[in-house]
Length: 149
Image (cartoon, rainbow, N blue to C red; front, top):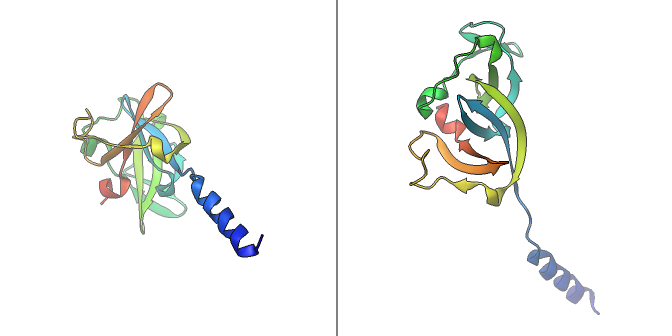
């Protein structure tokens, strides 16, 4: 068999195998809502020590950004020290995003991340773009770039 023919057959077989694409998210909660943001934009999870109006991270003073209000949600009533703060960046801007809890980092098959349909109960939430299922719970995927503009 000539080399060109065997290489061409291998290329055809290789294209027939579907590459599984993965999407990786940081999962967190605001109130009772389970949410997710792309791991590429979230650098760290911190536990704030006070109710100060900013957080210091790697020599930067980061302002708090309110994720809850644009989503129509309310942070839980617990003490600030019991909450977590996601350190996120969009381009050269850095933010401290208060959340009630951080659960885990998950990697899911990209085909399991479903665009938010117009009839979905969370379709009205600004910045909500998709969902995926984790265990028995539906996780709402956020467009953090849009929310932090």
